[in-house]
Image (cartoon, rainbow over all chains, first blue to last red; front, top):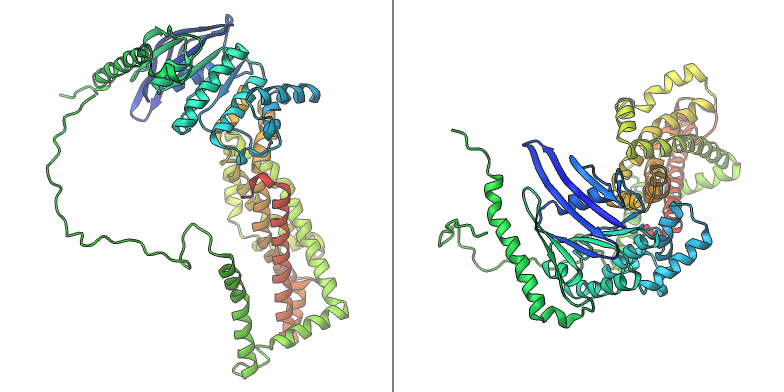
Amino acid sequence: MHLEVKHLYKQFVTRRGPVVALKDINLHVETGEFVCAVGASGSGKSTMLRIVAGLEQPTAGDVLVDGQPVTGPGADRGMVFQSYTLYPWMTVEENIGFGLKLQGAPIADRYEQSRYYMDVVGLLPFAKALPKELSGGMKQRVAIARALASQPKILLMDEPFGALDVQTRESMQGFLLDLWRNTGTTILTITHDVEEAVFLSQRVYVMSARPGTIRRELSIDLPAERDEALRRSSAFQDYRYQILDLLRQTESTAPELTAPPQSA
Amino acid sequence: MTSHVPIPHNPPLVRDPGPARMLRPSTFWTIADPIPSRLSWLLMGLSIGVPLVLWWLLASTGWVRPLFLPSPAQVVGAIGQLWNSGALPKDIQFSLMRILGGFALATVIAIPLGTLMGTFASIRSLLEPIVGIVRYMPATAFIPLLILYFGLGEVPKILLVFIGTLFFNTLMVMDSVKFVPKKMIEATYTLGGNRLQVLFQVIFPYITPGIIDTCRVNMAAAWNLVIVSELVAATEGLGRRISVAQRFLKTDEIFAGLIVIGLIGLAIDILFRMFLRFSCRWAVK
């Protein structure tokens, strides 16, 4: 698997005129990597991820998966959204097996696959539960399992834990790391949470806002085995402050970039 | 990062706020929360009981002439008599048949039409203007035309119910598609779903409770229309029964007809609610 985003531009036309949301975005993700794009709101990171997913079209530039240009959404790029997108009339099991159903897999395969992924995310006892009976963290696990059950080449995550409380979010981050190590899935996540980005990723793209650009690419050279104690280590904190400083700088430069032309 | 907008030291003093005012607790006037179920049952009992008692008082004291206001007992007697003579069951049967026929026809067309209009902005642009215009033409104004075209048989009555409910059903089904979260549709695309699958396997199941509720609400309009059509021209039916009773000054039978219509309407309403609970457990709180 090789994801490549090349010279990506996105311009929106609003009533006040055109707005450049993304400017010359270049990034790549390789097989088995866990990569985060971190940025403040308005950095266009969500738009970027949606373009990678094929849910939006870029104004210019290319998204390539294994050399093939992305022209629309497809099961090779699974996606987990911030808001809960589970089908409320389906049980956990049916939700997880739905991708395979859409792709025409036989019932037996679907059953086996959804059992397997329910086990992976620890929700086997809730196979027959409806989404409304689950907590927020459990819902996101189902969403992750649902995306993985289609066996995508890459898993795209849009602020997957943004709606969760702090404790749940931290335990879900640990869960996601375990899942990533055990399944070897390739993951591209966007987040505004700097600590989350450092904790999860091997590489981080720091994005600046208005227009959204990639300011810096950082390798996170922390041990692969990551636990809660790591969050307190100085190496971890160094990365955190480094990214926070980068984000702060981009913020202070932002007004100049967006200042309207002065009329004489 | 840091903006240096000077903040005034003291906010302007508009008036002395005085002692803190707090919202007083209330059971009866609770907003957005349920009331105790005993209170709820009591109020629901009053809702039926008070009008009934008032009616009985008005009729039994003789303030109103019996010709205009028969007593509850007389009306119950009239219902019993009409039932035993076989007239009432026949009337109910005919009225129900016309309603169900016209309404079923309207629903069968409204569900796919409304779903398509709600799902595809193109279909909406194509059909919304014409639906919007025809919707404002009162269905009852079509009666002369329907009689002219189809005579006095069952067809014009069924068609009246059909015309009168089709557009409301269509627009309400269309509206319920608006509540399908866009992210849910996008998630389906990223799971490999195509548009047809989104339509049939995501949008349609999602709006099913909305469709059932739409039917429940619009059923009342169907009743209205069938009674009007029978007042104009019919040999049987509850509307016909009321107009015949009026001709012979049988006020008790007019009341009997009204009450039977109300009770059947209520029964249908309850049936729809039960069907919703039974078929869409996920949507019931």
